[in-house]
Length: 205
Ligand SMILES: N[C@@H](CCC(=O)N[C@@H](CS)C(=O)NCC(=O)O)C(=O)O
Image (cartoon, rainbow, N blue to C red; front, side):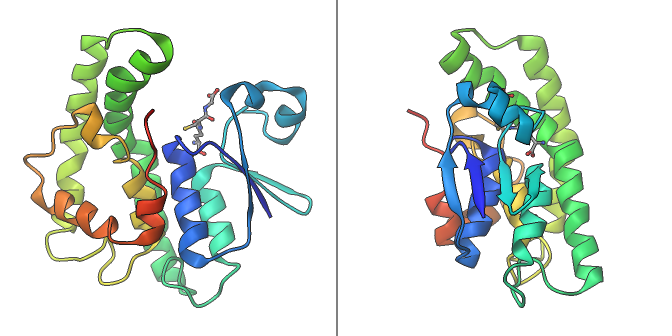
């Protein structure tokens, strides 16, 4: 298997953490942003985005789909247990973070960090205010889930943790307001004790 990836990307991080945690043999092809719009790359992923997994004839894009697929390569793991009810529960958190939680966290990262670093632009106050609203609308749901659990589903780390956790990759440098969410902060501390998670922390410059 070969993964086209950019180590700074939080979407790639959730896949790379899965690979490392399971000890999967995957060739990592680190890309530059310019590489993603070449005809060759677009023929594999018309979105021109990473991550992209190649396995035989399969060209698989979308980070959460890649996570589920590669996790099946190592049966018997806690990340994606062979139990449809657990899988449904994990998928639910993956879809939730993609559709809801990431709206606020991405707005913070984009407005306060990436615009400055890559576009030499200042944050747009209206976009940041909307991001703050989205963040506080969704964070309490995760905060409540983690009140009595070590990881999102319980005692074992699952793809839900790597999926949702990736949304927080830039929480600190982007100034995401975390004070009202001690359970999320404590869970992120536990995530950082996992070598696969710590090793895939994106390095900003
Ligand atoms: N929903 C996609 C998002 C992929 C995505 O937006 N990737 C970014 C990196 S974080 C990218 O490749 N951006 C390059 C571009 O849009 O030109 C996933 O989860 O895989």
